Every structure is written in C-alpha cells, then in structure tokens.
Image 1 (cartoon, rainbow, N blue to C red):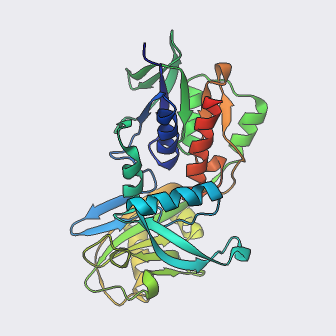
Image 2 (image 1 turned 120 degrees about the horizontal axis):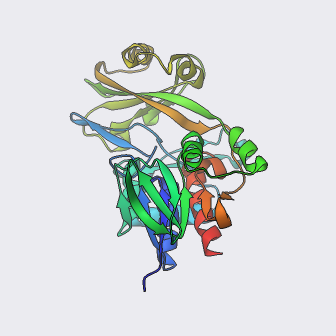
Length: 321
C-alpha cells in the first residue's frame, strides 16, 4: 500500500526543496503551482530574441549547509559564480561570491525537479478535510485528495487567504505573527537594447532615484542579444504599484538611459507585489488539526534564495520528525 501524498502549494525554491527532501525519505509529495513553470520569483522569461532573469537576479550562500548544496549545484552545472561583491547586510563577511543560474535563475529550480510530481497552472482556492487528511481544491475540483499533510509556501497574504477560505483556525500568536509580515514590492522592466549595455561587470546598484538595480543578461550569459533587467526602488514601487504599467515602464527606461551605452528597442514591465519580506520569522509554523499544515517560504527563514531553501528544508524536517 502506497504512502498517502504530501501536498505542497508553490513550486518555488521552498516548495521544490521540501518536495525533494520528502521524496528522498520515501514520501510521495505532489507540488502544485499557479504559474506555467516551476520557479516562483526565480523567474526567467524570453521576449523576442532576448532572455531575462526578471525576478531574483543572483544569490549568496552563507549557511554552511546551503553553501555545500550550492557547491553541488555548481558541480552539476546548474549555477556559476557571476561576480564577487562586498556584503551590504553583513559587511564583516567581506567579499562574497554571487551565484546565478547557468541557463537563468529558473533553470536552477527546474534542475531540482527531477522526477517530482509537479503540476502547474493550478490556482489553489482552499483546503478541505477528507477521510484520509486533506483535499486541495482549485475551483470546484479536488486536485489532490487524501493528503496526510500540506505545506504552504506562497507569500503570506496568499497563504492567509487560503487558510481563511479553508476555515482554518489560527491561534492568536500565529495570527499576530503573520499579520506582522509585510513585503516590499518591486517593479521590473525587461529592456532589449540595440547594443551592449556597457554596465561594468554586468550590473549596477543605485542608491538614489527610481532605480535600485540593473543587470545585463547578456553579460550573465543567458541572452544572446543585449538585454537588461531594471528593478525599481522600493519607494518608486510603492508609489506606482497600481499605476498603468506603460507609465512606470517608460519612467524606469528613461532613468536607465543615462547609465546604458545601448538604446532601448523594446521594454516590458512586470509587477512583483511580494518581492521581499521585510520581516522574517525564525522557523516554519504548524497550524490546523494535528498541526498537519506547515507554513513555509522565505518569510520563515530570511529573504532571498537562501532563506527559501532553508525554509523548505525546515518544513520537510518538521514532517519527518
């Protein structure tokens, strides 16, 4: 008799990490995601002849366990060291490698999927108890039935909506902890150029104005033509999040022009409403009957790729324990 499935909502780094660890331990995880492909904010997109990392651009590895895993990814050809830079958040660490996906950031997650059961383009609405555990419902259809446990990895506002629509009662302490987690938004522009960008070392960080960061995808090695990703500052994103995308795309392109050698031929904008959690908890949370629902994701272990990985691993270990 096969083991009951473990349902995992979200096929980003957290969800795929948890699924891989559970599968290795003999469980049968099923991962569902509303996107067309796995990856979450580790997203790579093609626009014409250009390719862009338009979410997460790179990552560092600080925790020993994660650093060891990154070295394994490096040996597998999933990642490469893009450049080195001083740590801004922990200056005492000195210069650190910045890693990126060899074929784009999304390719890292795709490379970890292997033979996992990952089902995309499924937007989960709620969880319903059934005779064996939980059904995961999208629209009027139970896309997973009889799940012994559920791991939720979406951004907290989306997770709270699922829990509310599932009539899952939260303790006051858990509800308060979730309410305190807020996110910074980012407006991203994918700009194709008529000539190389001229960005030194392929990237540029700015501390003033509407732009926080620019990355040269051709320099990174994922685009055959000049293509730059522009990320807005948090304040610009807050001011323009609900505005017409054409307006803020045009404004960011105009601000980027003075830093680029090539001229922009085409530009496409994308909103990241939950770009980065501004506050993170120390570990995953268990809720629901018999603590059978685990809340995970980067908001439970620190922002960025490393936090997402560590939280996914923590979620799997909680179940295995």
